[in-house]
Length: 383
Image 1 (spheres, rainbow, N blue to C red):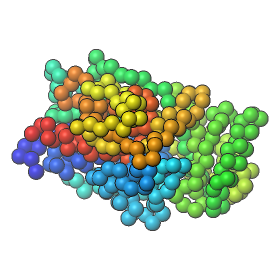
Image 2: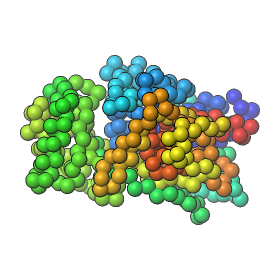
Image 3: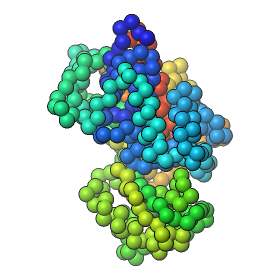
Image 4: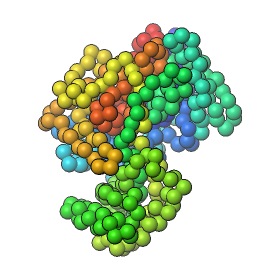
């Protein structure tokens, strides 16, 4: 334990925020974990991500030690249905988002120096010179000021950083993902090549006007359980009306009844819109596509990544650029530090990176590695 514990406020309880909170708290810091919803888990929990990328290299071995590896092992022990699986040329961990939520809730609850502020938003960042001194938040009990030694924005969209008057952001334009959980299918209902036929049927229905244009390019993937399938729509983040989620659910529920193997299928859940790139900070270093292609390594590395450049281009769809066999690259700590500030950081999708570099570095396992390393780095810096 530290003689005088640092106080760190972390905004956002997704992959990067959870890892940073656990890392810093385990080193003795006092942590305020500020989450705008009632539940922990971020995009995985709320957007129904069931294949966790970025935990493994292209041979299926763990790519980062520490909390990313510990997370994977906890998930494997928590549910016998959790398993490693390949998707194309990459390895992922297939896990029920609900199990992920249970695991991270237990993990955080076991660290008494983490105070979780749920249903709470950042509303003002108070600075003196180049340092953040306080974070003001708004929750069910009203406004509250948190004196901090460091502030970490792990919202994925830099919601806390954007509160600064002179905030500079790089805009993101990648398509977002809307995921539907489907249960009650026949086993292997979307096993290759059946999934190709289902995609073609969905596209034909869009072209015939039987499905809305929103469903163009719909993607179907096997789930964690034998009778489970996930359907994903890839849509502009500014073109989605959340109030119509129930309508889209009913439309899809009617459509899938005509698919082979889906006669008894139903849709228990629709995820929140998953934002792939909600904007990136301008940091002390901007991770580039060239860094990724060259396999660049950094003295201040916060983690290693081997995920392909998975850019969901507006009006086009996914551009998937696999890295060469055995190829990895590193992410520098400087890409997590807001330029011009001494104690303002980010962890996760809003790192300082070119958009195509972010399209590789944004995956769950890499965000856990960023948060893990950042929590330790803040403690070192403050001591």
